[in-house]
Image 1 (spheres, rainbow, N blue to C red):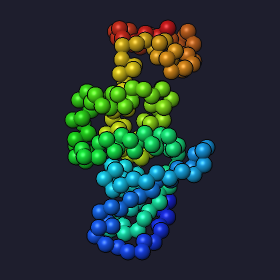
Image 2 (image 1 turned 90 degrees about the horizontal axis):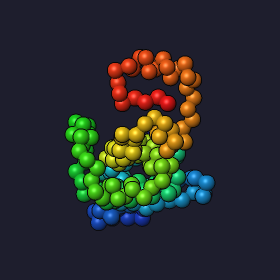
Image 3 (image 1 turned 30 degrees about the vertical axis):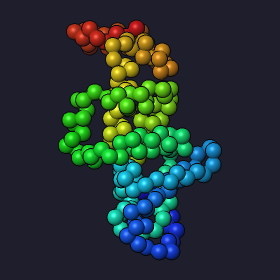
Image 4 (image 1 turned 120 degrees about the vertical axis):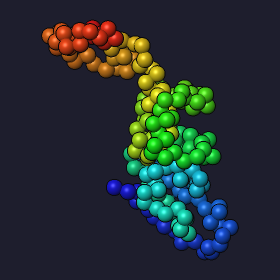
Amino acid sequence: MGPNIVKKSSSTTTALSSLKKKFRLRTGGNEGVKTKRIGEKVIRMIGYVNVSIDIRTENEDTIIDIPFVDEQTLGRVLGWCTHHKKDEPLQDHELVKIRSKPVPEWDKNFLGYLSNSELFALTIAADFLDVPGLLDVCCKTIAGMLTGISAENIRARFGIEDDLTADEKAELKAEHQGINEIRLS
């Protein structure tokens, strides 16, 4: 399902106005309906929007509804996109290459102050809105949080209930006898 698009007619269409074209993304979270005005370079980074509108020929101001993403999280997505708007667009075959690279310092700082729930919300939004570069750095950040810690510590850190019985744990240990990294406690 694509975004709901509402068009407002513009009084004039000139080459200059198309260079300064702005889009409005509208969220409707608990805080009511909010819009964020953004430029064409940033909007091109959000695949969810690009699927439904042709930015090259759109001559009217456009409001695009963004469901499932709250205002604060959308602001973070747009902040990341604004910082990275001069980056070359990623092609599908390039995604594999960037996954093996470390998270850039700016992205570490950008994501580093977020709580777990804020980071998870941003990851879900990046996936839903189809912002592959942001999704990649969010996933790498979460993976880094999990590296080298036991299952018990992961459950404690993320508030995950241990729902395995002692018999199920023993069965899993037997299945994975040769793997030292798995600790089922």
